Image 1 (tube, rainbow over the protein chains, first blue to last red):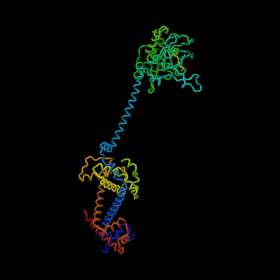
Image 2 (cartoon, each protein chain N blue to C red; image 1 turned 60 degrees about the vertical axis):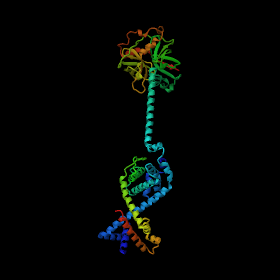
Image 3 (cartoon, rainbow over the protein chains, first blue to last red; image 1 turned 120 degrees about the horizontal axis):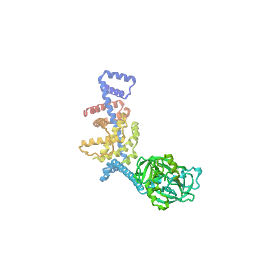
Image 4 (cartoon, rainbow over the protein chains, first blue to last red; image 1 turned 135 degrees about the horizontal axis):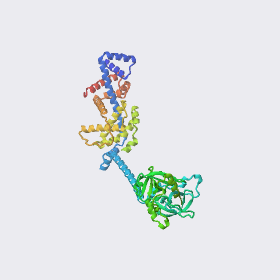
Length: 364
Length: 190
């Protein structure tokens, strides 16, 4: 009995690491020689571990119970128990699902809104196309803003000038240009390729096709010789080479290209789409084909598409011309049966034309 | 629920470090922090407040042992872990009591915790065996054993506490108690 108590206390000390180095070695010796001692050690270790764990769990439970006491469990229960209302239960259970659904709805609304927004814009484009394309043209029309292009140090005496291009319809001073070039003008001056300025007045405006006809009323103006070109009434086909002369700067600039579509902006049948480099100031310039026929009036270009300019078909210029009393027009342009430019090289054609193309200066 | 949780829940890192350092405060915070979540789950799945307490405490013990065991990897959020463990325990209890929980109402994500639970059940058996053995052991043996092995009192303290004339007597008494307890413990169940 005594021995066993001794043995057990030694085993305990051994397991707890309380034995000295020598004692431990001696005990391990004993343990390896005596299986019964070894068995006792193993059993005791297992038992002690169980006891330790039991103690740990017990103290943990005590701690948790203490923590539990701190909480207002009754109130929590009240808050969290299944709610009698079906709706709130549904909400609690499906909070995340509802949140996802809600965000989808939101997304859908945003999407629908933006689509609507887009179609609305398209709609207004469409309207512009049918009526006049006023807004669109105010953005992308090719009026040159003198204020912007002129250098800051040579500030013009009269600010807020705009410029465009126009071309002669009759030798006696009727010019064609775009309505948006001269729109809102107090006074209009035209300047020929030699640099002479003449006063002009607006005699006809056609907002539907963005065409205006002005007449040089300056007494210094002497009649031109017969027009080298004629206005073509029929449409021409895609791929036709064309060129234009305009005043994006103070000297005339030639632009060459081809008809890229028989319709203009968003299917506008009153205009051609022309692949031709044009810049602010080109508006109102004549668009001529290889035979020297005026086939259109450069009016605008697409902002977001490269190389897409638009030209009002010459048919509408002729229509506009018909609205003016024929006796004041003098010799009619249409009387030219065969264009004198036909068969000439481009250089010669341009040389002949440039006297009939004017820079239009607008003061307001 | 989310209001309560977010306001008082300690970070996962805080909890793990706290438990490894035997911080009572960390355990308290952990306990208070996630109880509402478990309570809600139990209450909404055929349980009572008391069930919630039992299940929750079991889950905390599992978590505690897992962290203490050193092989704890924070593969998911503690919240998810605790919820998953509680859910598993509760479903088991329900099926034991043949209270079928046909549609479990879930409030959180869950993860697989089967192996942790199995290990825990083993340990829990040991715990219950020890508890029962100690119960059968009776006084003063139970207190002596607990004082010496759990509360780590010295034989000196024990002999004073129980009025033994010397520590040898106390040792002899303790030895006898331990032998009986061992018999009870190893004899029970297995």
